[in-house]
Length: 368
Image (cartoon, rainbow, N blue to C red; front, top):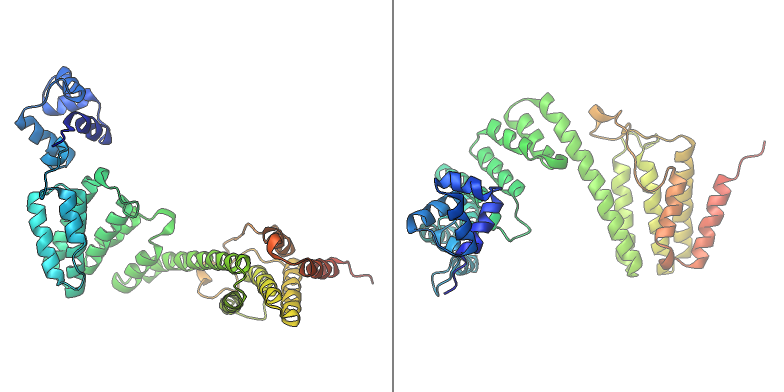
């Protein structure tokens, strides 16, 4: 048995942002007593250990820091998490309920129980289980200092609280919770849907929905650019060609009027360049030259009459005047050059010369 009481008192105190003097005031004892506890020169009485556990939102055994075979909270959490997922969700909930009686202040058990009760509440429309999940998620937030899972954080837990409110049809509470945790617009889509569909406030919701749509389009462009780099650098030409062609079709579909210029034309020209590189690597010279000419032609046309707003894009009528930009270059032609530089080691010399010729021809001034 290992006792880490002194170290744990110091660690939990700091996690709450308390000084030794502030902790002493909370417990109604002297600063000297706290100092001795944290140095290990003396230990608190049982009543103070219980008070400390309550203040730190941990179990007594976690505060003391010892493990006992068959009675360790982490081992119990491991056991429940390893249960066959084919088992009844109600049986797993029962296991968590028993574990909570023994370890009511252990983060993994509290959080795991919250997720299971939430699943029951969502799937079976059980309000009692959803309210139980709400209580447990709030308690898990109190215990977040124990969390060691990088996939879990306070924002995620608060969004789960919002989801519970939504299923409970407490929409104003759900919206308020989502708004409090809407860093970088991560909850815009949810907020917009709740306003429009459930609160019957379409004008309040549409701005959130439009922002979410544009954000997802931006993320899709970045994602597919990553795929292009991967397929080019690993010579997966067939997969890359299919992905590039799909991306171009998708981006073209975002234009309200295909015949009018749109900011998306600059981005599409970059994907035509990727397509040309992939076709060149595949040994399709004619197709590659055609894609290359299209890339340069689109870039030159865009630069002759550039559009740096969201006009002529579907689903964004309320945001059509919003300015946009990207990091590929100040002009579409700059974007092609930058893209080629970034992929230089994976591009043949012959292809590079073809691109240089096409760009030189496109940029050559017209003599009248």
